[in-house]
Length: 339
Image 1 (cartoon, rainbow, N blue to C red):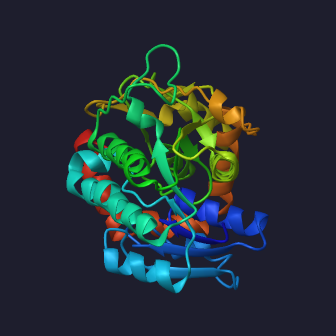
Image 2 (image 1 turned 90 degrees about the vertical axis):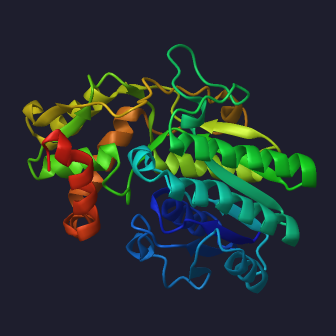
Image 3 (image 1 turned 45 degrees about the vertical axis):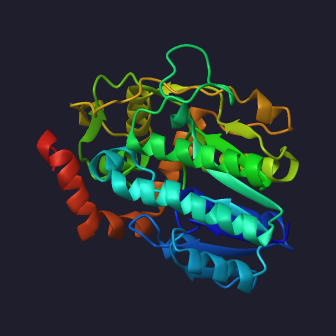
């Protein structure tokens, strides 16, 4: 592996992985292919923009002509697919985009991987494909139980990857990550939404009773896990990535407020979203067997994230003041009395 195509590399996890890869492997070359939708942001990559090993191409993974041109011109031997429509709330509003990107886009990339004979195709997936897990922990061979258009689209992409491995020998690996937090996460997601709202003394819209359980992992821990799977994982296999512990959403909200010195009265319970999963929990022993270990607890991941948003208001304030974000916030929370 030498020439990497990182799709969705201008997004949250993708941009962190691009930075991680260039810092860790001096001989790797990275091409980012990103459509630059609302969550794709070249500011996420500004500190690597002048690196001669880095190239950016604006394009859609569902456009086969663009994908094949990038593969050919840059002699791509490894694909890591971060490109996805990801937010559950948006999937309830506009499911068609999730099918186009997360399913058809994955198909286009797999066809390119097959045509160009890549050394590895790696798919970034999510713990949400398992559905809610009220007891125990999800293992990689558990039955999938999707409960939103987002999780259904990601599960479909996973199954396509496994089918292309079985049918055509495409060297596929998959990681299913828990909730990522950290630098450059678009502030529609719950942790950066709560942090940035709290900084400005705005209400924190907490769904339902707030007792939903999530494994909040620091994004660079996830990047390390992907790296381990790329270099040591077995082709055709799936690996869970997370801290192996969970935190209630209401406790996450209180922790954010405590770190910022803000009152808990900013928490505003709102109507729950449809099909809101009560708990996700991953068994990460398979990845640990490859020598990986999460470096941060959930609480430590939240704390580092809060500090980053406090120190980098240059990044998120233009986003939250922009027309697209304000329209989304009005649509999502206006009926709940928060916009």
